Image (cartoon, rainbow over all chains, first blue to last red):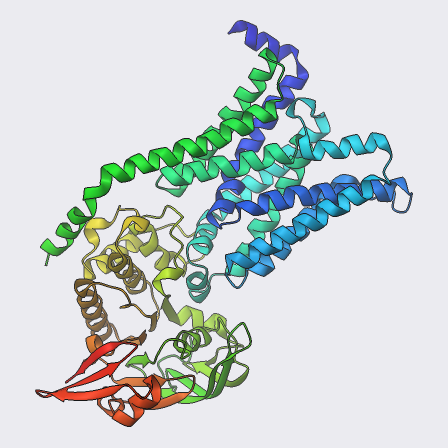
Amino acid sequence: MIDIIDLILNTPFLQRALIAALLIAIIAATSGTFLVFRGLSFMTSGVAHAALGGAALGFFLQAIGLFPWFDPTLGAIVFAVLVAVITGYAGESGVAQKMEVAVGVSFALSMSIAVFLMYYIPPDKVLVLWGYLVGDILLMTNQDIVMLTITTILVAFIILLFKKEFVYVSVDYEGSLAHGLNARGYHYLILVISSIAIALATKAVGAILVYAILVAPAAASNETLKSVNKVMIGVFIIALVAQVIGIMTSFIVPVSPSAITGILAALSYIIALQIRKIREKVNEGIPEVIHQETTNIE
Amino acid sequence: MANDSGDDVPLVEARDLAVRYPNGELALYNVSFTIKAPSFTAVIGPNGSGKSTLMKTILGLIHPTRGTVSVMGYDVVRESKEIRKLVRYVPQRDHIELSIPMRVKDIVLMGRLLKKPAPRFASSMDKKAAKEALARVNMLELWDRPFPELSGGQRQRVLVARALASSGPLLILDEPLAGTDAESQKLIVNALSDYQKNNNVSVIMVTHDLNPIHVLVQNVLLLRNTLLGVGTPCDVMDTELIKQVYGPTAQIVEHSGHKYCITHDSGVDRHD
């Protein structure tokens, strides 16, 4: 035990990785939970890949000297928000299918832009760009940590502040509107702040890990837990444990921490499905009991 | 809320209304009517006749392509903010997303908390009103039960309770009796009837079947993309009118003092 603490205290990149794991678990518990509630888990992947396209555009514009101020991170955020807004616009009519198409098209477009521009970006920058796809939580810089911390605090604060509103918009969009809630505003607010968080997390740890951590734990918790707060706490625990085990394993065997984390996150969902199945079997006789209760009262 | 429930201001007034579906098809045309408060109004007609669209237009969720609608004197396009303070809405049951872990109490409290300013904390008064509303539809025992695990009829009762717990002089319900068991139907109708009589509120209800509510209803709007009939339940139980709405196979049969309306859509609709 003391050995482990000693190792953490003497290894700055390990400290950064553990802080990042904590921050990403918070993003998963807030943004991830609500994206799954809204039926938008697929958007996470679209936004993460849009970030890649935006970053490629940033590197390209810097390389040809046209807009040297155009930072690749800024490009990533702009593209990510754009995809989120397009998805949100398609989904405003409440048709989930349209949102799926919007995500699919923007996904393809931003990946094509990224691959297209790769030929015109200096080779050393192409490596950085690949980091957006298969990034490594052990390779984070101090700057990455600072930006991720600011975003996480912002996202967690907004989502906890407007938790009820986001729940109501997810449960009954029309009803919320009809009772006077600015449902449209909240619909876009959650999409935009989530997409900024996803873009920065993608830059930090790579699209694959972001997708695994934002979707699977939320889906797993939502299958098994029975209140919004419990789901959020469940997501936080699953996400944190999966990441910490991933990081620790990479010290023992030569393996990418993202891979281990992704596999563990996916496993959590499979286990949750089994738990749900077993519960349904156990509960098969219950509905009649409910019926009795209600008919006896009259 | 200066001009609500004034003597001369109608509850709902539609003038030459035309509304399109999102896909551009015409949902409603030439619709003009006036409903005075307080009233219990039923909107009937076959599937795709524009009933839900009319409700959404009244709530300002869809804008008319022609004509105007006003609720208690407020225009639905320009003053929807005011209207939304006055109405309580029960959407069709399948519009409620079941993948979110809500409990019965969360759904019922929603009706009150949506009308409150942020941070929307539930006070003891809110909880009391929510419990009273659930008791009206005989669902109080299920206060802590997960909403998605209820039967269709029970979920519908909870949604009606959500409207009863909320505030505002106009209740709009979209098919609250569709796909419910006989017991739930009776509970919902009785709860609405008691509540309407004792609380000086008006109800507009979209329904397939006039039978369960015909003794409560004062006005019926018979809709098939345009308004084919307005009147009391007995007025609209006219063979010619019913054929126009439901097609040539629809019939009205008189049997031992009751009128039965037989249609493809609603099956048999008894009428005393």
